[in-house]
Each structure stands twice: as C-alpha cells, then as structure tokens.
Amino acid sequence: MPVMRTLRSLWAWFSITLLILIWLPLLALVRLVDRDPAHYHTGRWFRQLGAAMTRVNPFWDVVLEGERIEDPRRPYVVVCNHQSNVDIPVISRLPWDMKWVAKAELFRVPFVGWMMRLADDIPVDRGEKSSRARVLIRAREVLEKRCSVMFFPEGTRSRDGRVYAFNDGAFRLAIKAGVPVLPLAIEGTFDALPKHSWRFGDPRTIRLKVLPPVATDGLGAGDTAALRDRVRQMIVEQIAAWRGVPVEAVDALARDEMTAEVKESIKN
Image (tube, rainbow, N blue to C red; front, side, top):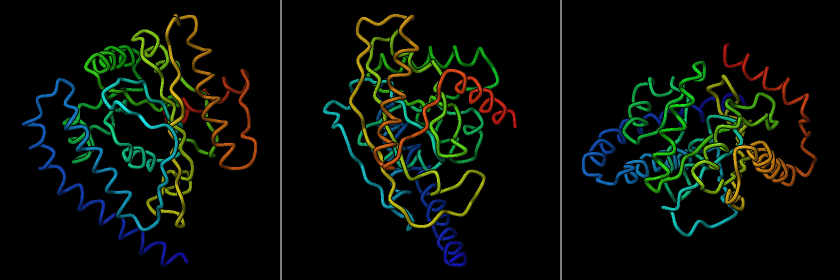
C-alpha cells in the first residue's frame, strides 16, 4: 500500500539520519587515533555506518554470497555494477575496507561528505579530464598502502536495470599496479530506491556476490579492453543467473551509444 510504503520510508530515513548524527563525532575520534598509513580503521568504521543502515531499514534483506577474502589487507581494484544509491551501504556489509572513488559532489554533502573525507575516499570530478589522472595516482598510492580501491566503472547509476558500458580507468590502474581485479555483482537495489525518488520500493531481497578475482600478472596497457570486457561479462552472467533470463549483451556499437547516453545524463 502506498501509505504504508511512505510511512516505512519516513521511518527508514529517520533511522538513517539518526545514525549519521551519532556516527560523525565517533568517526572523527577514530581518525584522531588511527595511525595506519591508509587510515584503514577509520574507513572500516565508516563502512560500518553503511552496514548499520541496511540493518535498520525494514525494506531490505541483504544476502552476501561468493568468495571469501582471507587477507583483508591484500589490495584489489574492486569493481561493481551500479543500480542505485542503495548499492553503497549494501557493499559496506563486506568485512574489509576499501577507499571509494566517488563523484566530487558527494564530498560537499554535509555530514556524509565530511565522513567520506575523514575515511580518505577519493573524489573525482567527472567533467574534468585532469581529475581522472589525479584519481588514478591517488588510487595507486592507496593500493601501495595495502588497501583496496572501489570503483563503479559504469560511471553512473543504471536507469533501466541493465549493466552499462565500463570505463577503462579501474582496469588500467589494476594492470599498472599489478594487483588483481575483484568483481562484485549486485542485484535487487534498482527498485529498492529508484533513481530520483526518496521513497523506498517494496520489501525485497538484495544480493551481493563476490566473484573470483581476476589476476593481472603479465598484462600490459594493450590488454586493458580485454580485461574490462572479461570482468563486465562475469558480472553480467551472474545477474543473468539471478534473474533467470539472459541479460542483453551490449555490442561495440551499442556500447558507444550507451556511453553517449551516460555522458548526457551526467551533464543533466
């Protein structure tokens, strides 16, 4: 019922806001005593906020599946498809920290943006080419400090539930740094909080799966596209398995058209 959905949404947002107000001063204290070069413990504490958000929300049942990462300080370039803002707290349920590459606008949001800065997340100005180069330099520094880096390689949230074309940056970084790519697949968040809506969707199960790491040993710059497409295909196939239907493949021509659509949506 629409009324119940509205009431549940109000309750969820109230709980989330309360958590944020409590978490910020605690996170600042953790940062003061965190001597790790990557501020790993500060980041881990911040991700716990996201995990807590998923637990107080009455709409979501989060199921974690897949590979177990034995060493949380082994650095990976982590990539995931992007369906909704809900992806962020759901992925925060994973039991290790990683620095997130996120659009610069989020770092200007009161409270949340302040915490992202405390956690040493990495801002990217999507309209500025030089920003992308700075992001890759900073991300490599994070990897050298034995902390993973998280990308949404589509560059924006899906508007129709499909997996859009992946940008190359995360895969170039993995090859240059000589670290594996760790693919994640997420399903169920697209309708959990539709784009440009404050009301949550009906109660649902959200699935997040850690797929097998993809090694980059022996790869060079010329292998970037093949690595990108291989990882994207792994994610697409997992989503197809969950849905029980084929996920539309995006060929080279459609990829260019989709990329143009994504760039236009960013401008808007």
